[in-house]
Image (tube, rainbow, N blue to C red; front, side, top):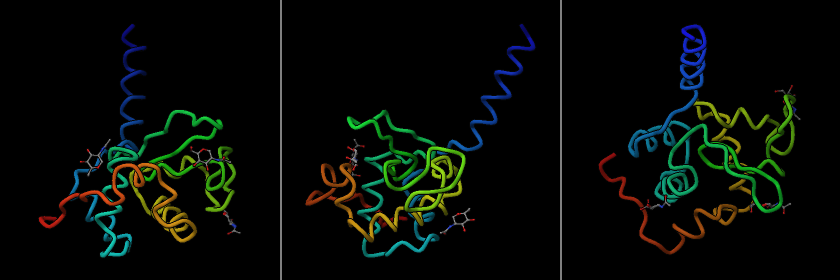
Length: 140
Ligand SMILES: *[C@@H]1O[C@H](CO)[C@@H](O)[C@H](O)[C@H]1NC(C)=O
Ligand SMILES: *[C@@H]1O[C@H](CO)[C@@H](O)[C@H](O)[C@H]1NC(C)=O
Ligand SMILES: CC(=O)N[C@H]1CO[C@H](CO)[C@@H](O)[C@@H]1O
């Protein structure tokens, strides 16, 4: 019993390492250090808050077409990341690389999605951010 508990706790601990929920200002700093456009930062914060609740390791429930969304930016596996252990698709990455606390890979991929579709690629942005009041980041 103790052994099982130990294994469980060890596992829970390991999975915690790559499970971060950013505070709003912490997210702003992280996005700034990834070189996101300052003029669009409030849109990005709104998008992330509505898509993932600022959680780096969130894997969405399957969409109607069977695809899933991964990580802080909830990027879709249909086009952008590979579900296998080999990097691939348009971001040339595995989907699990979108779930780490280090948001470098996820940010690069999100910028690629943005370059192709702008914010319209994200339902979270369209439904909760477009033409809506955006989060206040003036204190960040
Ligand atoms: C599958 O659904 C997701 C979310 O609804 C969407 O982003 C994606 O473009 C869809 N893919 C296809 C091939 O229809
Ligand atoms: C894709 O990623 C792999 C592994 O990171 C790398 O070896 C390969 O050169 C990349 N391919 C392209 C087309 O960027
Ligand atoms: C569902 C959800 O997370 N909604 C949030 C979307 O973003 C706005 C602005 O940051 C928040 O106020 C909502 O709570």
